[in-house]
Image 1 (spheres, helix red, strand yellow):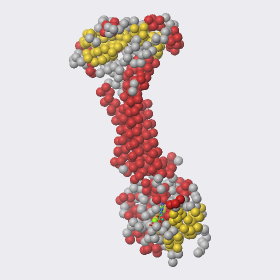
Image 2: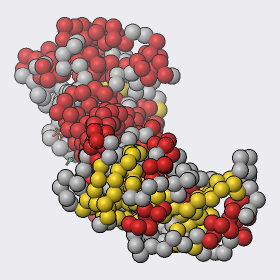
Image 3: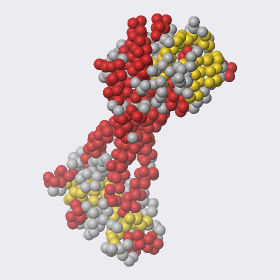
Image 4: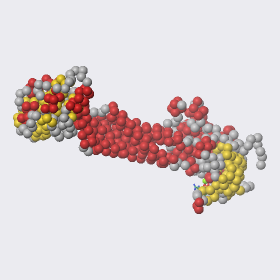
Length: 231
Length: 388
Ligand SMILES: Nc1ncnc2c1ncn2[C@@H]1O[C@H](COP(=O)(O)OP(=O)(O)OP(=O)(O)O)[C@@H](O)[C@H]1O
Ligand SMILES: [Mg+2]
């Protein structure tokens, strides 16, 4: 373990998580300990139902953490209020298995929605910034298209543009390549890697796809709700 | 702040515009609901306006009536003597009696009889403000000559036309031959499909069972500059309580009150407005609910990105208000057209008033916001934890 100049950007200690209540209460995460440093690309693998998505949604403030400690960007998120969770989400980019683009907005507007969350952006040309970001993912000429007119890989690239445009410190991605063929899956992941390195952005990526493991700085493995040594 | 609002991507508008068919259905639904409300309110207003038009055109400052008189439809009389007593009060300049009753008018062409409201006036004093009536008072002095309301329903015959062509029209009124010697304009109401003015002597000939010493309305004219309320309270205090002393407007309000509350009519129109309102709520709710349901994963994604519940509720409200405005405009235009048709068919004074157009607009806004508020429950169920 090495200590960089700054504290880890994600620091999880003895985290437990349960679903359901009373008799139906079921523990899905057991004693999770994990540190991720700024700029790192970490891939998490593990069998289906092992708790990967659950851990990701806790880190992203999409669910509130129940037990243990979870510091994201130096803030304790265990037992945080709903407002604090919403606040945290502003600093995180999400990429989902389904692209989840707004069907009633153009590609450019979809990306723009991410900028409009930040007050200071209203003094800038948000359209130009959005187009610039779309160019970075190779879709500059599709800015005015509606998502339904794009291929799966293109949609996922728009989702990447949307996740990265407001310069989040952390990007959380849950099986971003699952709906894509081999080639476009590889392209999408390489694009994420390149953009993240340029922006010094930390990535935690869940995948079942063994062919993309090489882009990771580190690989962690989840089994039955516990992190186990990958090597 | 406002500038920022303009710069934002207009989620509400974009969402509505994306589903053109759904938008068209929503607009049609709201327009229909508004039309329903406008028609109900329009007829209600027209009914009241028509019913009190004669009251408002009476040439008098104060009137005496039988306290039990509620509507022109049901005649209630009082002793004419009261009118003479009123004349002795300070400030009263002149008095005159007014009779009315429902008679049977025979259409000279079809020979079908139909009920009509007959007024008996003193031909020496104008009972109605209308100059058409005052100018023709002389022709009433001769027995069996009458004035006819040209805005009466056409079932009485095209009396106005024939009168203009021939200068006189003869027909049967309550079994007696009368001559139309002039026209005036009042209009049909729910109580009377038409009006005829006769002299008091002609009136008593037409209605044999009526006694000259029992009248329906006593018209009181005050000297210029007299304090109306003061004379009124003196008359109320001084006259026996078999008469009621009212201003003409007060008299009109009694008639209106009768139709609004004394009959089921006010309730039925109110019910009609309520039905329109509920139809609107259901339609807007359906549309908003479908919109939210269809886009639930997208709303959840927006929440995951950091948009607050409040922001998204705002979008929903905006959507509701946009629908309200977009639906109201065609609703208003259609209603204006329908008012024209209804006027042509019924001759009721059915017109759009600013007040009514504003109240229906407010009702539309309330209707849409209420639906938005219910659809919000669905929006809250969009859980960002479900999107991964
Ligand atoms: N909302 C929920 N309520 C109750 N149980 C849940 C809920 N979400 C997940 N679980 C349970 O928690 C466990 C972990 O689920 P999770 O989705 O985190 O697995 P995963 O590792 O992401 O699996 P996969 O690779 O199939 O996506 C599973 O047993 C699942 O049934
Ligand atoms: Mg999963």
